[in-house]
Image (cartoon, rainbow, N blue to C red):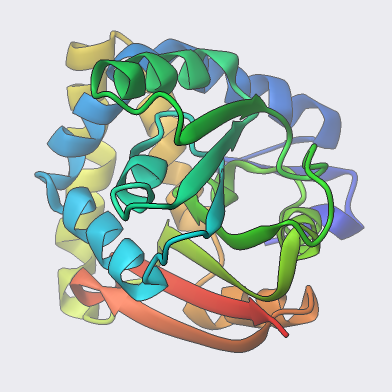
Length: 250
């Protein structure tokens, strides 16, 4: 995979596109799926994504007084889990206003009014002051940015010294035996579910392809270290279907 930072092109699924085209194309994908994004996550993962996100929050171990920035967190499910710890607060930042609107409406319906703020912004140029956040998270969003290394550097920039970064993302299976079955489900079943539920088969074809183009566990850890994170560790989830990457700004 060519690095977006060293090429005039980047990946949009399996397609190579000019760097300047990817943000608009990704935005169109999430505009299309925003109203039923969370329902699709439940259907695609048979609800397992909820367990992965709960593990993410348990590993983060929120404490009273902490402020979280959840990047690409438009629907707010990570932020809602974080602020379940009394005395915490969160900022949800997403480049897609439709996702933010869906997440904010849901959070208000659930009574989260003062604990969560909503901010439209780009992961590669976060509209947040440096050294402000106690924790930064990104769940299933890093593969959608155009310049991953720039986004990693930005997320480190806004962390306080001693702050922690966690990334939850689809990754590489540890058991090769299951790869064929996983590919069959991903490329044949998921786009059909997307077509029925959201009316947009192509959006879910892109999302499946973007998973396959994303760096594996070791490569993402290396890129986190290159961005300045220290004590980088990885936990595989569900045999490597997803992985949690942790890093600190020390």
